[in-house]
Image (cartoon, rainbow, N blue to C red; front, top):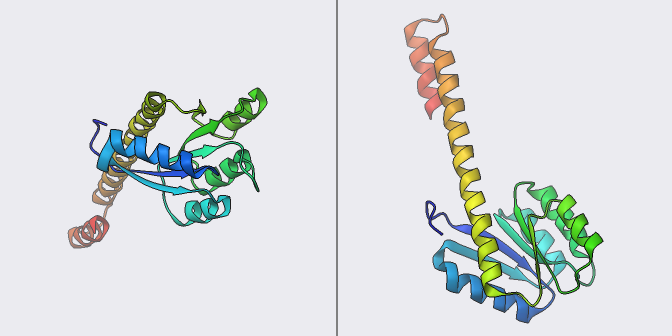
Length: 170
């Protein structure tokens, strides 16, 4: 990961604990301290965790007991529409995969997961997250500059303008 060395927060959800461990091990080996991984095999815990915390990337199995991956994907996207999503499935179903993309999935991988394929997908999502962060920072700076310029151009006395600009920049 060669962008600005941002930490990327990843939520991994799969009902198979072995797959959770494998995914975490692969990603930690490849990306080291640039990833912070939260894993759970419990769908309800995944919902609570996603609602309470910010994640950049969500990796989830499609077929899980209790709630299917599509419903979980829809809920996760409701919490954060910009989260990047990789769906995993051991049972490729064209309709389910199409539905996942329609609900906001960015990629899907077939189980058994190939380490290189997983890492390439995560790298792509990481690059996208970095671009989004940069765009938000630039948009925020542009907004601040525009608003500061508008305050400067108001027909107010200089003391009030200085006070407004000082309060605005805090």
